[in-house]
Amino acid sequence: MSSEPGIAPRRLHPAGIAVLGVTLIIGLIFSRTITRPMHELIQRISEIRQGKPDAFRPLSHYGTREFALLSRSFLEMAETLSHRSDHISTFAAHLTHELKSPLTSIRGAAELLQDSASPGGLTEPERKKFLDNILGDTERIEVLVRRLRELAQAEAAQAGGSVMLQSLVGELRSRFPGLAIEADGALDRSIGMSAENALIVLSHLADNAGRHHATELKLTASDEANAVRVVVSNNGDAISAANRDRIFDAFFTTRRDSGGTGMGLSIAQAMLRANGGSIRLLPQQQGTAFEVRFRAG
Image 1: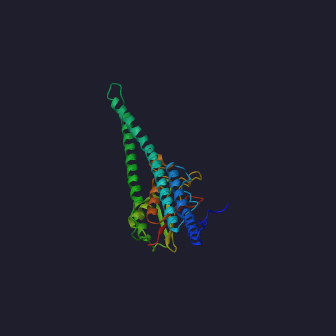
Image 2: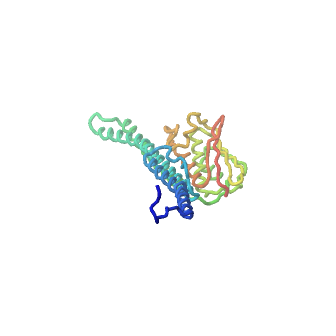
Image 3: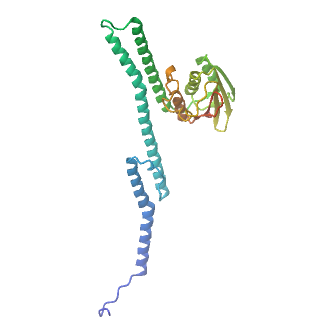
């Protein structure tokens, strides 16, 4: 079919074709580098809201370097907040359980004492027994509150300060006269933590040792590149294989009857983390040994 007379057929100019091609290429690049990862991140946010456990996995496409940095930072922050929320929920549940037992005991004893005023009530030895129970449970609650305050202080501890390990040994011996405390190695090395905070860490380890029937405590320090490694060992009861993974959990204790709160090691761990250090349980055939790493001072 021929075209009408006087009208030339339309043809695309090469420059127009080039512009169209470049536009398409730019659109594809923009879609791959910005739009796709942005939509994926939005979808991931929705999964986080729904509580899906794998929502913090890396994105399939990160796009530009800047967007990759932004998305990684966001997912890391969201994961940290999620773990923090889970920790607070678990901690609150444990705390409620720990407080419920002594409060129930105090209430029961108080009600019995209240009823003892009637004829045929409690004998004097029975009254004394219930009063002792009330005082004992009240003391346990006071210890829990004190440990909670120490844990809060440890998690919010300001990093900084410096102290030599040697200067801590004498104070530790003074606080725990029932333990034969020995120390050797790089004791003249300074650690990057204040004396007060370092004593909190070592005191809880010493207290934990004493509660598990230890009579001896030994600190062996060694100097490393950017840290001071201290092995804190004792001759007390060994930790069973079933409990090794739980000893740093708040409120976990095998010595509740003797006043243990299960918070000492949690406090020591929180204090070390706040100051760039760490703690872990070492394999031990007899007694117990912890590896404590202090940031070098």
